[in-house]
Length: 374
Image 1 (cartoon, rainbow, N blue to C red):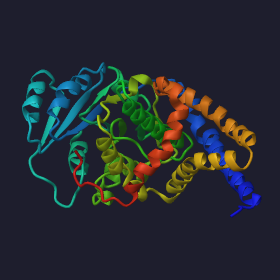
Image 2: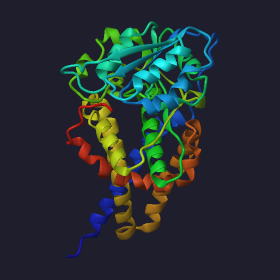
Image 3: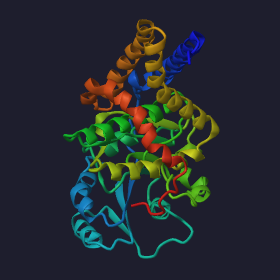
């Protein structure tokens, strides 16, 4: 069967449309993070801050990471609210030892499970409601601040209008392919949610490094509207309450948090399934923008291969080259902003990898999420 040449012309037209969509996202959204310059504040105010961490059977992580939170260089009043959520390991004893040296560590010891509230939302709600200060700074037990100025620089983004501050939750740089794949996917997610926020369309944050005012949580009745969903204590909540005017982004390397990446492919996929099951609950405009970008990225390389083989190879590569030049500039600048520059030499291969990543994570659309958060 001979396929008419018009079919291949249409395929090339589809490829060009995909490139146009990609170029639009890079020039309208992603370049905002790549060329982001924080505005200079005339007056810097240090606010009292409550850091909130939830832990369930995280004794090994608390020993390793909690000192980094407790020894922050922050002279203004601050506290650490640590929620021990029904741990069965040595968590309680470790916390007791820390409390001997750090008087600003406040323990909330939960000994019963919350009925009808799945995931991390109940312990996190208890921690936020118990916080003494208006500014709440969230991270996880398996995370450590990248510097002793984490609290100071995260809270510095607040002013009269700002109620939410989005930070970057990175992973430790380790040898191996899986570590690079995880870090690139994390960067790829960050360039989206940070750029969207800078464009006035914030849609999510990550619980590893996120801050908002306690009043935002209380006036929106906490997580009550999403209690039935196992995940979403970070991205879904921000999706509901963030606006163009009340959200700020912080990219300073000192404000990053670091955690250990998963050691096996299966563990990482389980983590991503749990995260992606919440995206179906995003606002329609966010689902459209994210879906269009993901679809264009998924179809890009198949359409490119078809156009090279059956239409015109040099014209196809020329069109792809336009996108590649724009992408390389944006990625170079954005990776430098987020301290992921070592990934740049690999970005073309990692970009191709995203096609397979979408295939592997597609089951999250219909997969039932886990009900536990740890």
